[in-house]
Length: 63
Image (cartoon, rainbow, N blue to C red; front, top):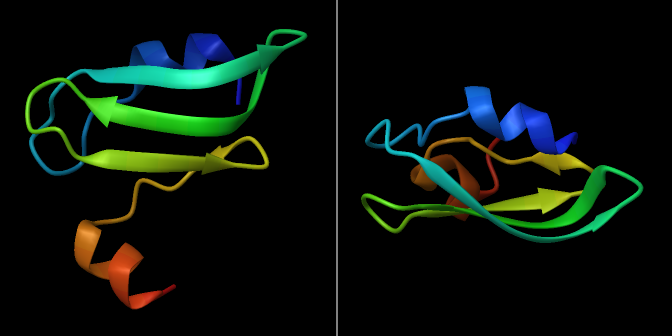
């Protein structure tokens, strides 16, 4: 995921602004988290892909 992508993303739960907590390597974010500044929901970034599915789907492992 490119850091610039964060500018167009919003929390799927409340549409709040997302804060990035991650290590950036060569302008790429490979692992980390996006944390909503409004509701506090956390979204994991794995292999450069943020998991922005609703909480229920993430907890149940649903695809």
